[in-house]
Length: 294
Image 1: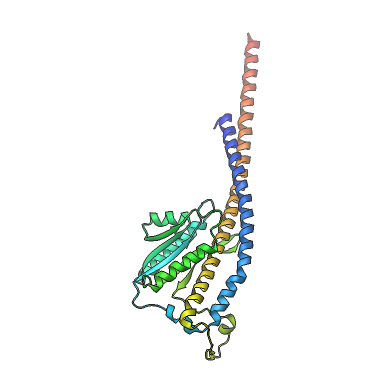
Image 2: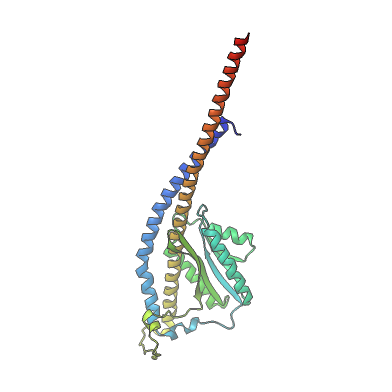
């Protein structure tokens, strides 16, 4: 059995850890609130981009269809967190990325990775994956429009140059406070998104005629770039919101576990102290009885 001094030292250590986890929970809670607000503010922008891309003729997306002469490679943007202590947030994402990598290789495509976040970069390095670029240490915020524009430009440049046949982004979508689900979203080859009404309409009507200004060859890159930026920005916002939610729940669980451990250690300390007092009393009584015999 541990000594009384060792138990007290351990209680103090756990209490110190509990203060840290409680503070981290509060910080994550504040960051989560701001991330959810940013996500809601960006929703009209993303919705407008999808509606705009879905309202133009499909022919506008034809230049961005699959290129048969492109190299047999696929670019995969992986969005993780820079820091840990967020439960299984990064582990689940990396398992989904590994599964997607196996799928791409089975289709004869060599996967290339663009790591966003320190955890993704470290994992891909350990797996000896081909990393073409990285963005790490993005604090205080990773979900920025500048990063979305940079990623969209990178994807378009490599796809139009025939360096890749496919591009996609893997991230954790925010479902709820308790659920962040890894997803993979295709970015290229680009296809015009279908409005909900058009999907529900099964009459097979022909596509209406549009008079476009400027001409489709000039308009197509603008529409596709805007659509890609909106999709990537929404993914970054989802990933950031999910990260803070996962970290807040992980720190809440750690705080509760620390409290339970302190209670168990306190009971053990009381038992040890009571045992020490009992032994001392027995020594005193035994000594008194021995003196009485003499």
